[in-house]
Image (cartoon, rainbow, N blue to C red; front, side, top):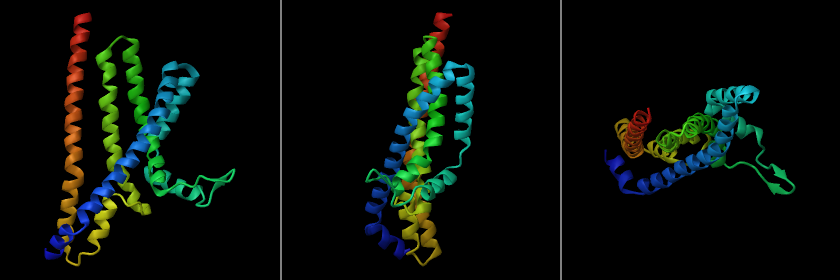
Length: 215
């Protein structure tokens, strides 16, 4: 246990916090791109007809796309020295992970955005406002999913924990470090989910009251 205590009293926590910043950076990029693409898809689905059917099929395909498959496809499809008109556009590790999460974020936004547009069309403002906590929930899911970057060497929070665990020769110390990682990584995100759930329930009740009043 002394090895673990020495590690925690050293530079582990600053490195872990820096890694968590990378997790949030990846999630922010992914949700930003997902918002732009997802709202376009939501508008296409709202239009109905052939466009709506094609858009719904595309969203279903994006929803089912495995993150690891997309990530390794991007990693191998875009050369490290790729250039266009003399400008390098090779993807960094962070950008590769962020873009691999875009199919999920865009599909999620498309679903939530479609509900929002339908509520707005019906004049149900409180129902439309559920879009905000829904997208916030997706953001925190993306923060957790960004740990996939550990597979390609992106120095995010989980990568820091795994690298530090390799320096501990005792199994008990490694398990204790993983427990510390669960506390540092998981509990704040679970608190965020609880708060989002409370907001969703409040807006849901407000929407029901509005519906009853207008009935």
